[in-house]
Image (cartoon, rainbow, N blue to C red; front, side):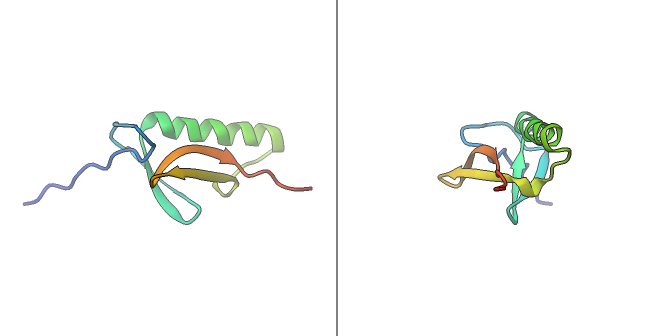
Length: 77
């Protein structure tokens, strides 16, 4: 029987095993504990500022097909 490979974190230069799958901008990304906490921290900051937040407010910056950072999408007034 074949063993399934454990996915690696898709953050650039991160060698850790992924524990979370998050869908952002219509694409699934695998994240380790550390980078998942970074995403939650960004969402929490947005919620404290605006009263609520969602994954739709997060943009993924990629380089070479790997994540370099998450950033909030600023709403224009």
